[in-house]
Length: 362
Image (cartoon, rainbow, N blue to C red; front, side):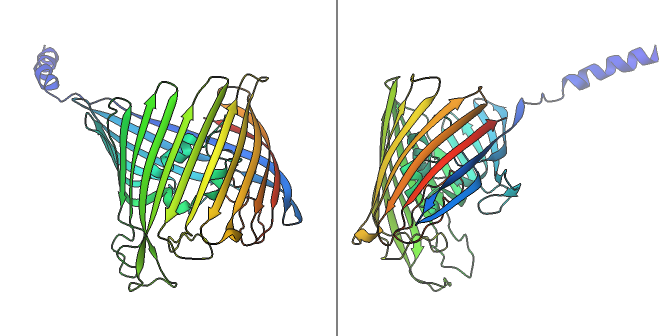
């Protein structure tokens, strides 16, 4: 009887406890390994590569329902080299993305290490059957790494109205480091994305503060680099063309792009890619692009590539490709991988490359 009375007395107490909201954490990843062989500036090379078509990553994506149409979110993404097991890129554990955010009727806001809206356009419109913005895309050979993602950043994505979505991000650059200029690396990026049926188009602007001299100290003068990008795509089912065009102004006449100083020569580049479907079981990628360095044609470059991707399953695919980069006398561009450099070349050295690889996801 005492046990029955005690149990009954606990019922209202338990009923008064708050209900825990629904939450989830997803572990995901992919691994891409390939064999690449070719000729760069007259020297032959063969090597086993990581992440040519898509970055090899693992990460965690989480969300918690807060009620009232709001969700708390987080994302942590690591890049790695499956050929060696080492951390890729910056060497940071979560060097690709690391942010917490809030999603609701107002849109979505994220705080931490974020992709810029500028880079979101590149990975959307630089096409690939198994993965976008990888080996074979001219824009992947020519883009400036400093515009892809920023630490100490805030990113906002608006709700979609009449097919239009606003994206914006701001990074605090050196974030108060007393040994660096206060504005170094400070980045503002704004973009509009439009979607209507099979048609897609993006327009972006990015401004980034760069150092004028090296070594960089707290007293180094900074200047503003200004980037503009436009992209369009239309899906005709059997064929899907896409074009990306980017300009950069405000840079100095430096020898090349530098992530340490955020310097980048003034240039224009474009990337025209076409997916061709229903020719056999796989999909063809044809890509052509050119880089024009303003005021110095010796820095120009042209890229040609063809790639054939075949999906073995929903998670696993194989690919084979051939590409060529023709460089001006001072240019050193190569057929870059999605995560990592291509075959190294000398100034003016052309690159011809062949790749055979496999990618799997979990």
